[in-house]
Image (cartoon, rainbow, N blue to C red; front, side, top):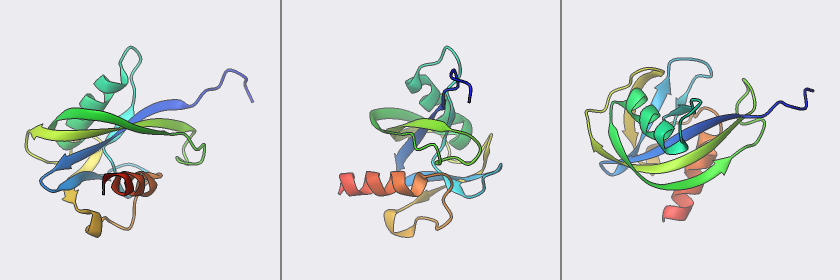
Length: 133
């Protein structure tokens, strides 16, 4: 292995909106429902990436509330080793609709989360709900 290989950096956003959280159905592999998110661009802060990805995938304007946790298990994404920083955000405007890498976007409550979640997003949401309530 090349000693200079490093994980790719991503952000994921837990967007609170209308008594639930926003999830996207992915257009591209791996399939399933996921938190909005994506890769951090060179020269972009984590916060800038989170705001951009939220808008690109959900059409929503969001306000970042706080950084939640980082997740870095090398097996969390079968495509390659991605480490993510998760943010909690609040929707502040826009009309919810899936765009960019999202086939669609919907609001889910804790009790009706979809069973087919991509990556480790079921674990991230489990952590979020266990800390919130």
